Image (cartoon, rainbow, N blue to C red; front, side, top):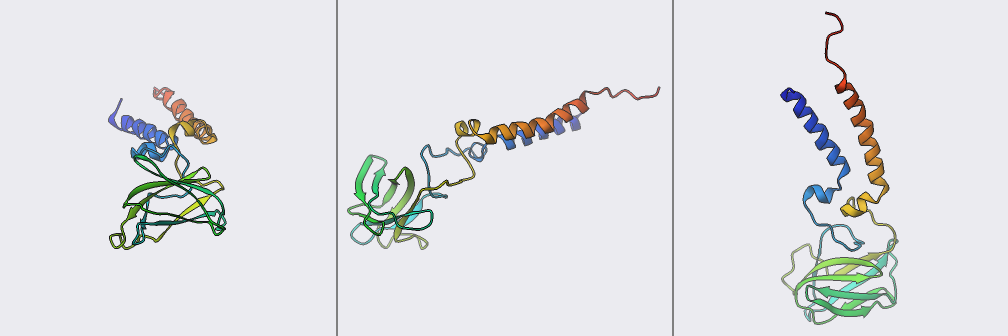
Length: 178
């Protein structure tokens, strides 16, 4: 087998794998096992001078969600459990700077909190969590991928490409005339 044929087959295999595997596998990332309602990585939030984390819970239309239970966790476990007020706002007092997961209504968002005056310039004063609706992140854990329609569609497209190539390559290369 010539080097060019070997490279061509390797390209076909890599392209097929690129179509079949979700982005998190190709990037070597570990997708979060829970449900994320907000795309992107952890948000930077500046605590107020007393160490209070202020936040708001809204639905996908941007309407505040009242009386929603909010749980705040750090690496050691649950730090606080509060409830949103009539305008969807909540506050958690006495937090040092660090990383926290804020969960409500089955949705979770991770925040990096900073002591007042130490936050990066683009940090925000209020942690926002969007609940409800289907959120498309562009990637999913590998197990979910194999149970989805995307896997079936990818397999069909891959077969539609690979079968004609295999049939073409299996034909004899002998010239038709001596």
